[in-house]
Amino acid sequence: MLDLQRLRALHAVSVHGTVGAAALALGYTPSAVSQQIAKLERETRTVLLERHGRGVRLTDEAWRLATTAQELLSIVERAETELEERRGRPTGRLTVAAFASAARGLLPGVLADLAVRHPTLDARLSEVDPHRSIGLVEKGAVDLAVAHDWDIAPLPAPPGVEQAVIGDDLCDLLVPEGHPLAGRKSVRRTELKGERWICQPPGRVCHDWLVRTLRAAGCEPDIAHQAEENPTLVALVAAGLGVALIPRLGRGPLPEGVVAVDLDPLPVRRLYALWRTGAARRPAIAETVRTLQAHWPTNTDTNTDTDRGRETAMTTATDI
Image (cartoon, rainbow, N blue to C red; front, side, top):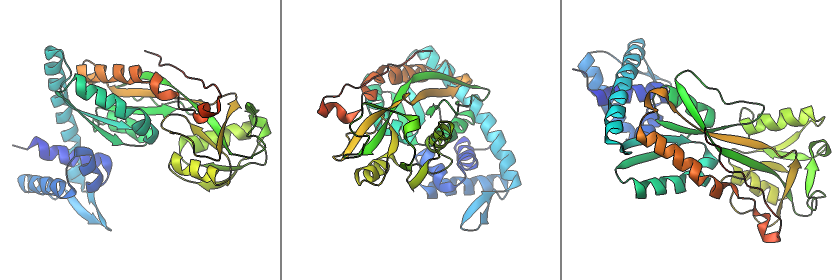
């Protein structure tokens, strides 16, 4: 009889692409995942992983077995959901994927709250790019994802995945202190011609939004510096190297030398919770979504110009 935990390890490698990434998602060490798959190879008398460059890749037989593993894991999930539903309280392991600023600015308080109120719920967080996390939910690699979209790039809704709005995250134009726009209350997008921009790399939603939106306003953005993390972008602005558009969630206090200015109209990204339809009845899913929405108002008021007496806007969560 095939061991379910070994099938889970193989399925994780098929979803995440590498043994290391699979181990991180499962909470194991890479060697433990490799050992599970090696045992599965002996059980099935089949080669499942083969060397490819410095890494490994799944054989054709492994891909077929991983598909079967996904079907079995779905059956197990349905059984666990029914058991938890009958108990009527959140319990068991819940895997959550969230993008960086949500993992930093929203999830710590949410997970701490859940741990206090539901001690039998074992919620575990992984930081994952938002559009990748949706696929992980769809494939059953994680139970719940926190993702976002912008007006130019609506969040995809694959079949079998449900979603609920958590809230709207406002964004500010950050400029160096002493910049001509630093004293302005708001700035129109058409006024940004000639600015040197600091933003995330191409392929990231924030980068694509900036380029497409400014082009529509007649401004071809001059992107001088690129970095993955928002704190790095803010540090580059503080050094006087350009301007940036940064969401408020998880941004933290702005350092000296950086001023936040409203961009008119104000850019907004919307956050969602996503889960598989088959798990929708699970109390852990429902309670975690409610907790995300309940914590949202205290996590959106992150505009740091309050020390200078400027009012900030805050948007509360919208329930679906």
